[in-house]
Image (cartoon, rainbow, N blue to C red; front, top):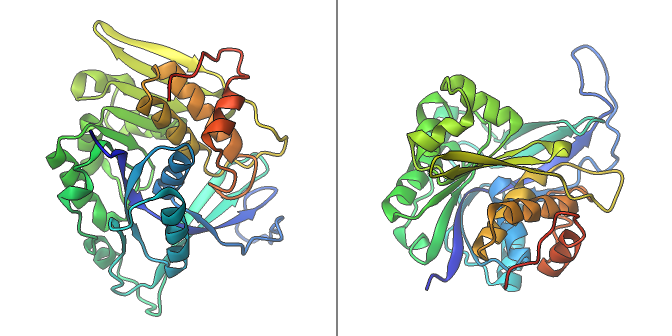
Length: 332
């Protein structure tokens, strides 16, 4: 019997958040509205999902690159609390950069712009060298898991991670990021066609449909291994496309209301993925999985930081039970 539900591939980054009434424009001074804009959070898509799932009691094997040594104590705390293995977490080869911090800008409508900044003593950062540097991936990282989850890794790690997943024979879930430095027209479609489950927001879905000239994202049901596509749409909830013997069915899932009025949307999509995959791990149907995803997100948006308010399983199930469309939780 597998020891872990998911082996999760990606990157962990430190994050700083700056909030504006509206995004800055050239030639105009724009005040930052949050006084704690220099506060350091622990995040990155992979780490957000990993942490959220561990809070729900899901055993996870992380395979991560990080480049900021300030993350090390957080990894150790998570290992002590959740029994998380550490041997798949590696500091990226340093090369000509020191560490990566993501800067997230948020406007009054909760729109986001994210910048990834490589701190370096070398004024001439070689991005091509950065893409060549990679963290080795070992087969045993996948041997005791039921499923692989690929998020957005450092550019140099994508090929080795995807090749290891294919070689393992495990089914793949893919959490999309519209990051051209990692995913491009040539390398993205093989990942999409290999994925059993795809998570993407509305903008990312549109991007995929455009670059590959799909009539709909559901074209992937006929092109590869895809069985489920989840489209998240912020306040409008989510759409779950589920492959069937004669086509596909679509499920519209409303959001789970949050406990606060002033929501913070950073990390909401990653929380959704974590809740959905928790549901999958306990045998829930796709509608219930999506409800769990929405409910985890409803906690994440209650505080700044992408995992600051991650719920326990008991908290998530209690709030989810308040949904008008909720069904009884499966046996855990």
